[in-house]
Image 1 (cartoon, rainbow, N blue to C red):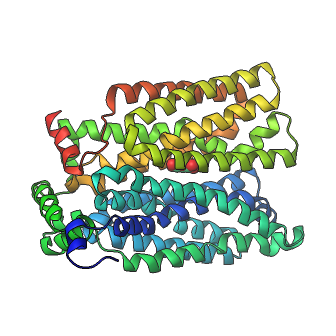
Image 2: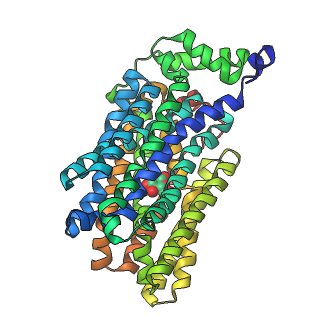
Length: 456
Ligand code: BGC
C-alpha cells in the first residue's frame, strides 16, 4: 500500500476496492446457499423420504430464514455497526453449513438451513450497504454491484460443485453422503468471509452516527486522502446529527417516497420472474421438449449469461446511470417474457424459448439484478439507512418466497404461457414505475441523495 504524503493526499482506490471485495464475499455466500439446494434436493428427498410439500419446504425454509435475518439486520447494524452485522452473518452462515451437512433428521436439517438463511438475509442487505457507505460517489455503483457479481458467481460455481460431488459416487453414496458435502462445503467461504472481515474497517458513516468522529476521519483519509476526507466529513456530519433509526421518520413526506421506491423495486425484482428461471430452469426447458441432459446444458448457459451481463452492468452503471439501465433492462425483459409466453402458447420450437430466456436473463443481469440492491443501499439517509434498507429487503425476500412457492402451482394451473405473460406485464409495470418514480443517483454522494428527499 502506498505510504507517505502522496497517499495521504490522494487516498487509495485500491484500498477501497479491496474492502468492497471483502464485503462482496457476502454475496458469494448468498449465491452459494440459494443455489446449492438445486443439486442436493433429490438426494435429500430420498434420504428423508420427503413428499412433494416437504421438498418445497426443504428449499423454501432458507428463504424464510433470510427474510427473518433481513428484518433484524437493520437494528443490529444500527446498534453495533455494519462490520459486526457482517461478522454475525458469516458465523450464522458457517454454522448453517456445518449443521445442515451433519443433519441426521429432517427437523435438524430445516433448523440448520434457517440458521444459514438468517446469515444470508443479513449479508444480502448489509454487504451492499457497507460498500455504499465506504465507496467514493463516482465508483459507488460499480463497487456495490461487486456484491451482485459475487451472488451470480456463487450461483454458477455451486452448480459445478454439486455436479462434481454427485459424479464422485453412485446414487446410494449420494443419498448417504454426497449431499452432505454439497451443503457442508459452504464452511470454506463462510470461514474465509469471517477472517477477511476482521481485517476491514468499520463504515465511517456509521462511526460518525455514533459520534466517533476521529475514527471516521481516519478511515475517510485512507479512502479519499486528507483534504477530501475533511470535505467528506463536513457533508456527513449534518446528516448524522438528527438521531436515527426512527421508524416514524420514514413515513414523513420526503422519505415516504424513498421507502416506496425501495419496497416497490424490491418486490418487482422478484415478481418479474428471475427466480422462476434460477430455481426451475431445467423444469422449464423440459416443457420445451428438451431431454434431461440438454435441459441441464441450457441451465449452464443461463449461468454463463447471468455472469457475463452482470460484468457488463458493472462496467456501465457509473457511466450510463441507474435509471437508464433499469429502463433499458425492464423494456427488454418485457419483450422477452411476452415472446417466451407466445412461444409456449403457439408450441414453437424449443430453441426460440432458449434464446429469449437468455435475452431475459441478460436484461435482468444488467438492470434489476444489481441495481435494485444498489438503490436499496444508497437512497436512504444515513440516520435511517439500516432500518429502511431492511424493510425493503424483507419485501424482496417475501416476494421471492411467494414466487418460488407459487411458480410450480401456476405452471400446473394457468399454464406456462400465461405464467410468463404475467411476469411480462409486471416487467412492463417495472418500466413505467422506473420512468415515473426512480431518480438518477449516479455520481451523487449519499448526502446529496439525502437532500433530494428533503426537497421532494
Ligand atoms: C436476486 C436473487 C437472484 C439473483 C440472480 C439477485 O439480485 O436478489 O433473488 O437469484 O439476483 O442473479
